[in-house]
Image 1 (spheres, one colour):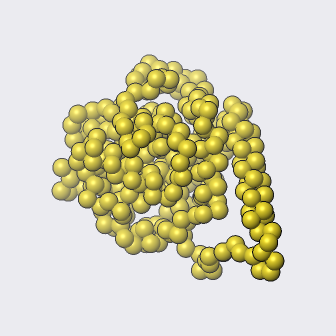
Image 2 (image 1 turned 60 degrees about the vertical axis):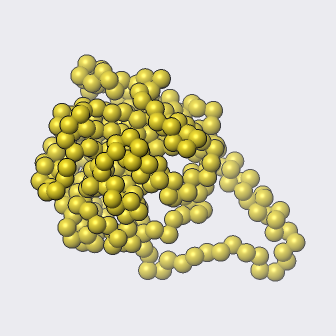
Image 3 (image 1 turned 180 degrees about the vertical axis):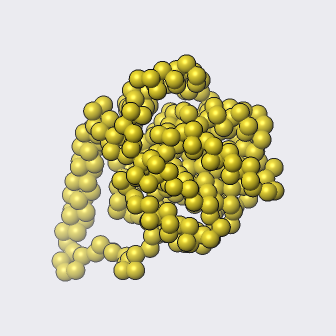
Length: 312
């Protein structure tokens, strides 16, 4: 509870607010974001799956002392709209690119965690003129399997019942994923999930749990969860980390919590091997070192950005 009080006392601007902070109209959607600081190279923070700008609660105020800092809620998460659309792999990259162009208005250092890291990497590849440098914090993403192949579902003999089969299959998938959402959307389950990915369990406080629970209460949240997960599971992107890193052309920092149960630290080593100019820093933390050991992460980020030349 001491950590929770630290948030309330020292960072009151990031205490959970149902009305949110700032909003930006993107296409037909309302996007929530936080902005602090007015000097230095702009930094854009991108959260992971199920999280929000609040997950950067200890990073925004500190980094804002020397930089203009932005954090946004990806569409479908946090206090951004829970849009009933198809969540294709490039959607969030387009959102980030437009945010940099329309709100930040100059190239930014983008920092992403988990799926936000993968999305940030993809953004840097697709929109290189908007990304001054990239920092990945335990990013999601897969390496290309040597045995990778495309599986195409198609009937082999009798095609008469195929449409009915597909309809039944889609119904079963929907019901299963909606059930999963209902089960996960409970305080005890969220706390257990966070405890699993945090090395130091004391950093999993009620404020953090609420920051996940409150957006999940949106009437569209369950349907959005279904659309996202079904897309990721059954129509995954063919963009591997190898391909993205091969096409990347900007300074790269990789911050890796070595106690991440979702991916071994050897993944960080492979990223560095694929991108020789990457700076790799391994940390004693889990999947979310920016929230678990924020002082170390803030210091590493600030030192790395300061070391880069030609950033303005």
